Image (cartoon, rainbow, N blue to C red; front, side, top):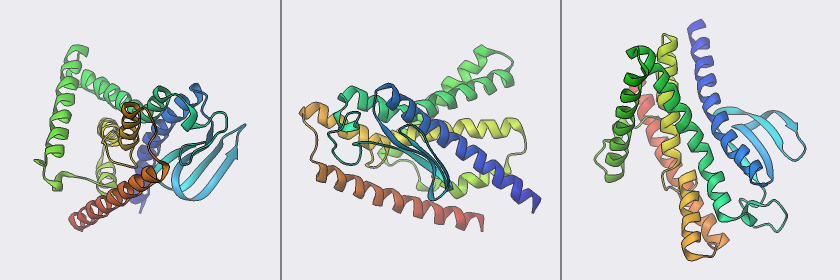
Length: 244
């Protein structure tokens, strides 16, 4: 029972922290770009605790497997000052990629520190980190071209299992760095409802020099969400079946 509780705490700390820095990236860049943030949420589902700031509601929700930054004019068009849709497109692009950028920088930084300590020099750590980055890029290419087996995909259940099995600070922080980088890369994939999907829509708007119709964008986002939920369900079933 104690091991289960310790494992659950480790999972919540790891996932909660990575979600926090990801959403903080969106939040801070949005604030810097003068875009109004209506809500900063860690977790999904039922609200546990909330606090109202000057213009932002800060919430902690029951399911610690994600989070979101809800901005004025993000989901629907708004003519108010500080609306996301009224900001210059370069600012909107910066806001969208900020979360993944933070995860990538954090993950590679932790990996570099661990590699430097383990190999006794910063230079060796840099080489190991470079090889790790190249390996990730190659894996991503295999995933895009369909050459990677779907059995290699891991969902929240599989991640939780790996976190629980960590037995040292080194293992825990190594896994933290790997998941952080993976989260950053995954979020930049051009899939609607992910940051990469939003980025793709903004790039299309930049090329066309006019925004996509609101109904069209909402439909694309909804289809992307259905796709993601389907993949997540299949991966979760696979993870549970493997554990059982």
